[in-house]
Image 1 (cartoon, one colour):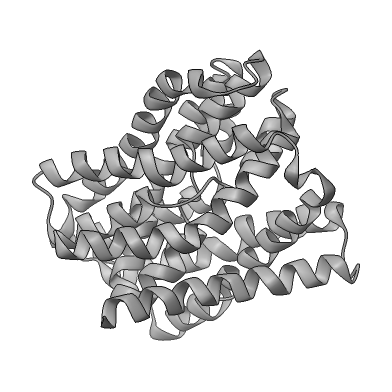
Image 2: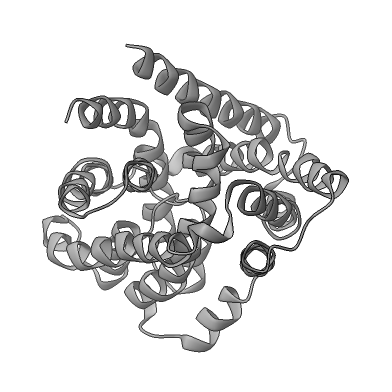
Length: 308
């Protein structure tokens, strides 16, 4: 029961941040355009500091194997989701090319960083957060390859440009410091943590504002949205966890990979779908449904996995 309490507290904290973001949008403290700019600041400027801190603080040169195992897991989860999405897309009611492509994208891409970050910190501590940032390297590659391919075919120039992000640079720099055993002054580490720790609540609040902005379109295409939610929160997690359980993974790696596999659709997908001609309303609606539905599915799956 102690595990369930921790899970429920973590979910509750996440939705408190969502609510604050939605309230800010409701009170017109900022609009959609300002939210997009602020999101870029949080992801490109603040998050790399937390990434650097988490990797340098929690890893040593002896952990070298993790530097390829975790990214491979992150990429594998997204690749598997995309493959399943191509098979499951025929369960959609509205089988237009735009909606089918959007469905496959949503099956491939989940909210692989900020939502699991707060859960892993609550459940397993900062060591698990460090694992998550390494796993997210592969997830980011999956987002800009599998996720883009599902929508518009291969756009390798865009994928390469987005892989060369400040957060990816922070991962590479942190791994270099760890492998070369370069000491980082405590004051610098404290500064990185102080700057980076604000990125988590801010990103969740901005997610809440994005959910609120869906507004009146929420109940359109209900069947397809509920079907996508079932795929994203039930079918794919079950299949992914079954495969993960067959791999010879150490327990900490398994715990992080399972939490990531349970995540709802990525809020960033709404922007990507718009750029590549997918169904923006359907994507936004599916993001809302799967995020809200994860309140039930995440605690349930984690509890069942703890018994297995």
